[in-house]
Length: 118
Image 1 (cartoon, helix red, strand yellow):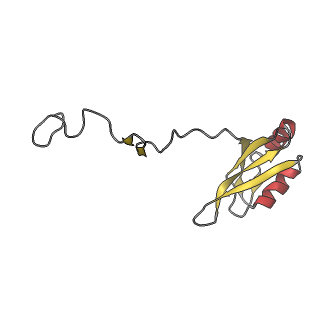
Image 2 (tube, helix red, strand yellow):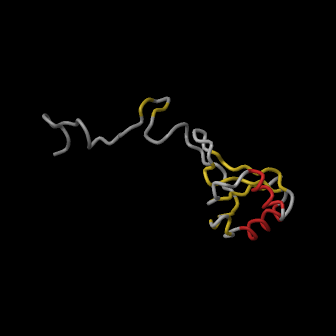
Image 3 (cartoon, helix red, strand yellow):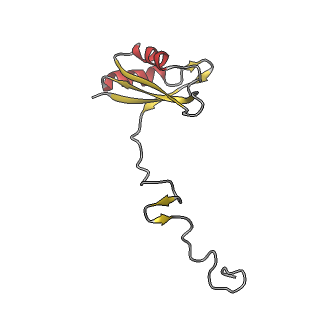
């Protein structure tokens, strides 16, 4: 099983192949991917590298964390699993309808002209 590593604060000049070559010094690299913006095609400044074993991954993390690449100190650590979003953005639309403000003490409550709680 491969170990996934997060690499952050990357300069925009870093490519998939240069990222892979930097990590290959420590052992076998399964994959290396710099995240790109869909609209501009420019790097987002972070990426992920998959290493073959946990020992090799830990050696790469300790060896590369804080190293300066093109004047930027990169962040290297184990990638966390992606968090579940729950089917939509907070306060947005969902299968149950609009999920906006659900507070009963705000809005057009029981108060005649102007409503509210005052």
